[in-house]
Image (cartoon, rainbow, N blue to C red; front, side):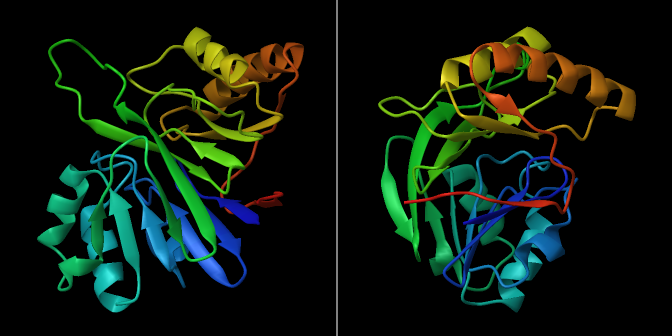
Length: 220
């Protein structure tokens, strides 16, 4: 399975001729990531994870694409696509297939930004039992250890100690960064240095993955 990183939280998976994309948001190369896509998974409704205008336009241009996302995302996209039958609401603790990909969902709630800011639904996705995309949450999948975890490096809802604790808790073999668009180059280097150092102490290899770079991963 080929994983390609795009800016911020958008990643693309390719396997057996099928393409699955997670979180094509406003900071990401939406059209490039969605080219040839069969399935789109969205973790939550915030625009840096789902650019509803650009995603809606891409869906209308490619009528065979299915979307799985929390209900709030489905509602937002329903106003922008012609065929709403391709929009599927998902919740945590479910499983489904998307072409050759198996998908399991975890979490359920966005991390707290501030008590005065209401939380929204957030669904993390495990693809083929091999890769975990948590969206905006530090929820750890229960009942399994996922070999590869995508790590939200920086957000209004997190601090670096929590990022490190999340990686340690997953017990993953390897980790790649996501959710880093708000960091300067200097800030990114600093955070990645700390995450790399502490992850290694617990057996996880953290590796910087720039936008548009791909890696091959084993899958079920």
